[in-house]
Image 1 (cartoon, rainbow, N blue to C red):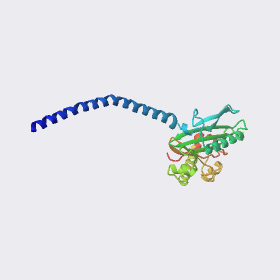
Image 2: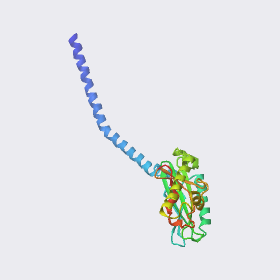
Image 3: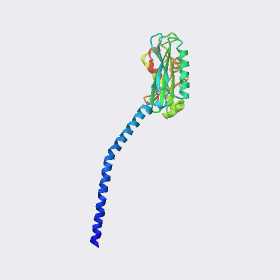
Image 4: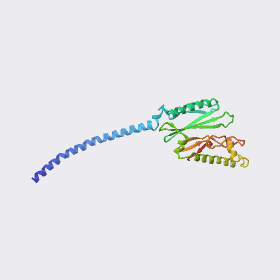
Length: 258
C-alpha cells in the first residue's frame, strides 16, 4: 500500500508542474507590456505637469501667454522703453489689479516724458510683480521715482497683504524698519566720507529731511526677488549738495532677508 500511495503522489506532483510552467510563461509575455504602459503613463503625467501645472496654465486667462506679459509697449519722449504688464490670472483680484494698473498708466503716461517699466518673478507659489515709475514732470534730468508691487498667492489666485508677505519670511515690520534705518545710515555716512557735505553742517536728521523721510515704512512696497524679501522705498535724491549723483536705480531697493 505504501508503494501505491507513493506512486500516486508522484503522479499528482507530475500533473502540477506543467501548470506552473505555463503560468510563468504567461507572465513573462505580459510583464514587458505592463512596463511599457507604466512608462507611457509617466510620460503623460510629466507632460501634464510641465505644460499645465508647472506653468500654471490651469489658472491663466490665456494659456498661450506667460503669467505676466507686456500688454502695452511704447517709448517716451526721451526714447526710453515703456512697458505695461498684464497679470494673466483668471481671478477677481487679478482683474481688479489689471484695471488699477491700466487706469494709473493712462493718467501717468499722459505726460510723454514719463516712464513705466516692470519686472516679475515666481518664487514657489507666489507671483511678484514690480512697477517702477519715473516722473520727469519736475524738469530735472533725474526723475522722481515711485513703485507699486503686487504679490499673488498662485494656489488661491488672490492678492496677498503686506502682513501675509512678511509672514512668509517670519519677518515683522519692526525688522523691516531696522533694515531701512541701517541702510539710510549707511548712505549718510558714505556721503559724508565721500565729501558731499560735512556732518557738522548736515546731521543725520538733516539728511533724512532732504530725503523726505519722516517714516521709514511709509510708503513701502514688498517684492520677492530670487527667493528673498526686498522692500522698495522711494525717496528724494535732491538737495543743495548735489546728492542726486550719489544715488542710482538700486538705491531704492532694500534687502530684508539677504
